[in-house]
Image 1 (cartoon, rainbow, N blue to C red):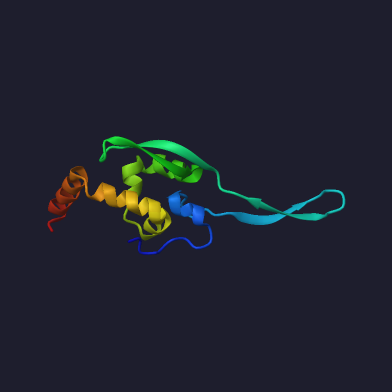
Image 2: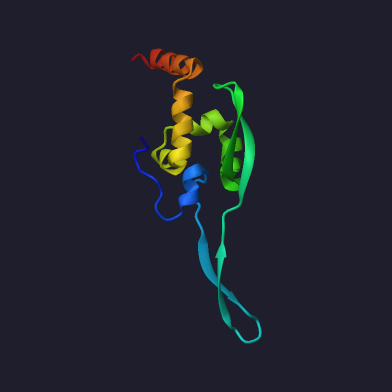
Length: 122
């Protein structure tokens, strides 16, 4: 199970890679009379087919554009999901955690971690 539990306030983010994004709220202020109107800004969510080398297939997932930039930066979907920083694990959410678990069970990832253990002398 995901150690942080499902997200309580923005439930849509439980079904994709949203990072830490949620709906933001504020006011739209008119220029003439300064009348305030409440408004919402939703995260930019896209459906993407991202390739996973460990699974050897494309994975269709909802992903925020900010998270897409992070995936490109770290070197792909597998590297993003297998990152070991506590902040990264917390931002995965339940859907990302389930995808990470599928990756961890593949032979390619098991072999990678075994080589890392040997290299570290564990």
